[in-house]
Amino acid sequence: MVSLIIFAIIALIIATVLGILCSVVAGVIVRRRNWSHKWLIVLSAAITPAMFIGMEAVLGLIGSVYISETKGVDWGFGDYWQAPLTESYYLYAIDMPEKAAINSRDNDRNFEGSVKHLWVAEDSILVACYSSGDNYSLYAFHVQDSGIDTIVNRADSLQFAKALQNRNMDIKTALAPDEYFDRAQKEAHKTESLVRHTIVIAILLALWAVILRFTKKKECKP
Image 1: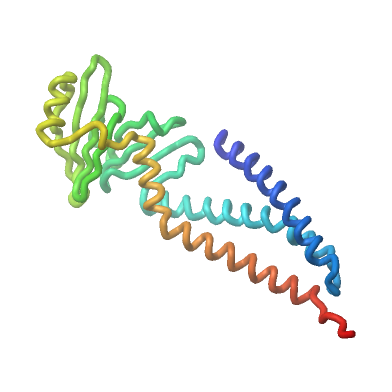
Image 2: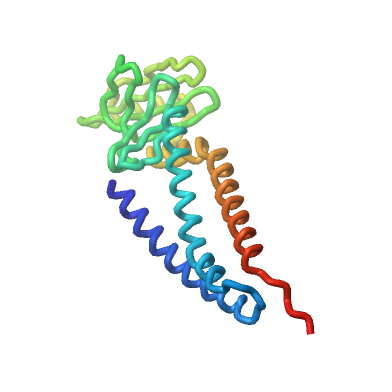
């Protein structure tokens, strides 16, 4: 809820500033034109940024709900974050995406500790978890069959480092949980964003075409 309020405030400020600028530009353009209802053009220019942001927000929310239901990726609205590891397991966080954990969709397995690092390969995702007492666990989630292998379980830091070395894995190449969430969101919304932007721009262009057709008059010939 807090994130939604902050987003709404920022969107309102941006829409107001852009609306004022657009109305000033529109006023300068129509001042010496032989057009009727010049006030309508200025007003339309003033509210166009708000319409753009509003439609983007509404369609974005609809798209987010659809993708959340179909692909299991949650944007973080309501301070909840979620991204799939496989069809059976997913990464989730509450309030802070950098502090994530693993859960099973069938609730058939519990994972101790918080996620620290993730390595994404073509056919698997390796996840390192840290629990109290300096214990580390390393899991391999297989994308195709949703299987899971436990590479090390509650190992100390030396055993954990050795397991990484044996697999030629480096902490420097790993993703943090918030980076994984961001990557999953961008991938899931790639097509949705393109469709959303196209729809919003098409609607606004069509609206302006109608407004200009209604207000514009032929220039008076000398």
